[in-house]
Structures are given as structure tokens and as C-alpha cells.
Length: 426
View 1 (cartoon, rainbow, N blue to C red):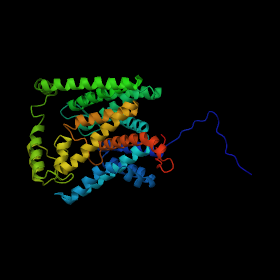
View 2 (cartoon, helix red, strand yellow):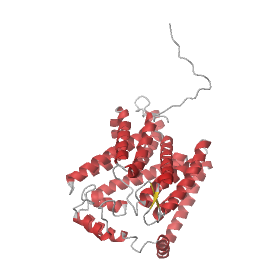
View 3 (tube, helix red, strand yellow):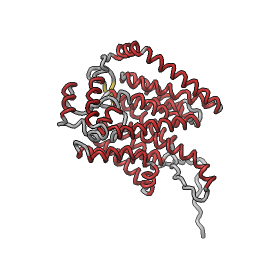
View 4 (cartoon, rainbow, N blue to C red):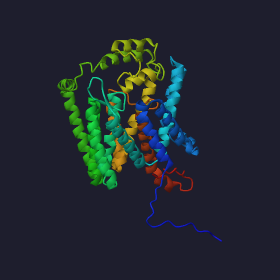
């Protein structure tokens, strides 16, 4: 006798839960809470992230092989142990960076871009609400800190919330409830970013939103019209760049007066000179991953003393490529630059073909990262959400390129074409 399963009532509420999505949300949320909760959040990131990776162990080797060029960034940092002036430090942080990369690749490879966008939006919205309820103001009263330790640490996730919300609320393909939530999230993120009073983040976020908007405008255009729009946008960008170069003195004066910074950009130009001197000593390999800002290192100690950094942490050369060149040399920076600008090119091409919420968000994210890289360090560091997002963007870009080529591969060799691993549903 066959026992048939009991049928569900027609009005029954069915909730499908994807474990990978839940673990991805916990991973992102823990990174957002590290500065508020501390070691517990860091342990939560490791636990949820590693569980996400090993949940499908058969995928680990596949991801290593498929995205070896992504892991090359972490691999070079780990390899710097061989010539690091502090090999123990480089080994420790290099392993942590490799784990961060593995978690980021697993999230981006095993979930759809739309699901990851919703995970990011939900986690950042929750962080904004927690900052609104439990946040605090800087000791000097100039700006909010939220649940974070500094205005830069606070403004970055608020900027990310704005980018996520912007992409969701303007995409007519999104459910109405998500678009309404996106509108609310954009308003909250804008308010919090203004309260953070971070001029650099506001400028970078504005540039990212302005760059992403034409992709949505081109959604209702034909392919030829999109090319025309891209050409007009490029021409306007060139004209704007020429004006900026011609009026750079006046613009710099206006920026300095508006932001209240001095002519050295709060000491940035001074430490850049020091950084170039350090790079000249070991141009190709650098001093080792995370092996410069170490207590006892004469160069770092002199800078800490000059700028009054008593806790001897949380300081860098305020430029992604300059700072990383000191640590991992010009070879390492070339690998990282290829990853960043390669991701930018891939996601822009993807958004041009398919202007949806997730693709437009990725283009805005990469534009903001490139703008910020000129004055801040946006990657690649261990246990850092910005690093996770950069890695995920590159993986998504590679996935889009591979999936676009699938039909041609199947037509040429349908019997031997490798099967791609489908992303888990949300």
C-alpha cells in the first residue's frame, strides 16, 4: 500500500528558507557589528562564514579552480611572508585574508546577485536602525558615529545602504514592498550619511549614484540608443574632467573651505611623501602584508608620534594603491588593480546589457570604491566588509561573462561542455 503525503490547505503559509542566504546575512551582519560588539561579532563572522563555505564542501575546490585569479590577490599577500620584515604578522593576517576571500567567493558563487543585494540591503538597513536607536555622537560633537568607532567606519555602511536602496527603489522589476523599503532605506541612509559629516563619502556616493543613474535611464532604450546614451555620457564626462583640470585650483580651494581641511588634506600629502620613500626602498615586493603599521617599526612609530596617534592603530597612507604598494610592492598592487578595474569593466558591461537592480548596484559600488581609493584604503584587508564586496563584485562579473558564453560553448560541444553550478534560490 502506498501512503500519499497529506496535501497542504490551499490557504497555508509556506516559507522557504535557504540556509546559504541566512548564513550570508549573518556573515554580513557580524561584520557590521564588529566595532559595536567586538570579539563576539568577529567570532560570529568566522563561524557563519566558515559554515557557509563547508556546507557544500564539494564546491570549495571548484571555486578555487574557477576563481583562481580572484584568490591570486590573497595568495600574493600570503606569499609575502617569505620576505616580510614581520613574518609572523604577515602570516597571521594573510591567513585571515584568505579566509575572508573564501567566504566572499562562496557567497557570490552560491547565491544569485539579486539575493545578495537583498541580503546587503537588509543587513545595512538594520545597522542604520541600530545606529539611530543606540548610536552616539563624536566627543567633539562634529558628526555621528552610530554603532561604529569612527565617522569613516559609520559613513561607509550608510553609503552602501544608499547604493542598495537606490538600485532597488528604481527597478520596476522589484516587488512593490521592496521598492517602498528601498525608498525608506535611501532616505534613512541619506540622513545618516549627512549626520556623519564625511565629505569624502558624500562626494564618492554622489559620484557613484550619478554614474549608475544612466543605466536605469537606458533600460527602456534599444541597444543602439544605449550606445548613443553611453557616448553622450562619456563625452560629458570628458568635458567635466577637462573643466576640473582647468579649474583645479579654484575647485581645490572651494573643497578645502567647505570641508574645513588644510592644504595638505589633513596631512595626506605629507604621509604620501613618506610612503613613496618607503616604496623606493623595496619597490617590487614591499615590506610584507600588514607589516608596516606594527609597533616597533621605526617608520610607523615616527608617523604615529608626528600625528599624535597614541593607540598605534587605525592609521594608513590614505590611498589604496600607495598604501598597499608599501606593504606588498608594485607587483601586488598590479594584481589588486587588475582585480578592481577588471571587476569595474565586467559589471559595467553586464549592467549595460542587463540594467537591473543588482547590476546597477554593482556598478555604483565599484565606482564609489575607485573614487574612495584615491584618499582611503578600500581593500584588501582581512575581516573587512569592503573587501568582501570587492571580491563578490569580481566573482559576479566573472559569472556574468561565463554565463554569457555558455550558449556558444553548448552549440560547439554540447556533449562535453562543463555544467555550471546553479546558484541556490533565495
